[in-house]
Length: 196
Image (cartoon, rainbow, N blue to C red; front, side, top):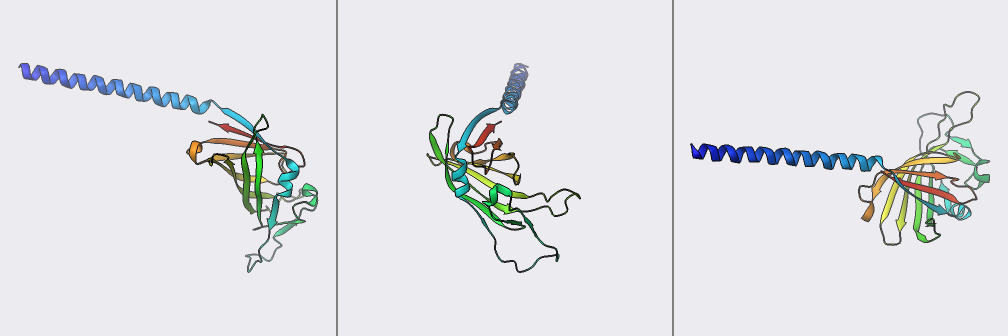
């Protein structure tokens, strides 16, 4: 009988330990959920004229296309014509390594961007074409850490919102969004980086 009592006591102790551990796990999960809701943001700045100077669009020769319709739209007015006079499906674009700065004016590293243009040709009547690009962006910090963010951007939009896709070093598994204002304009380009 004593053995059965010892076994029962040990079994009940194990159950209470499991329940306490489960309760601790739930608390940890709740804290993680709350941390995701809380947003912490920092703003970086890039010199507008310099980012324009470091930008380029590349067009490779096409060997085939599915339709006979034109795959380009005229964008001579976009960014003062600084990025080429036409926007063609499949064009690639890039921004060479360009320094970025924190709110105190300290150089933090460099920014780079690359992607592909994918204009929407079947736009509503009376409206112009919608010019978008699939873009990959990165901040490379002075210590070597990288923050990656990507999205589908509408060319010429005053504000772009991209998703944080992680990175290296301190940014492994990072999540959140980057809001870019005044992008490719001859004024300071602002990058508000918000982690959740």
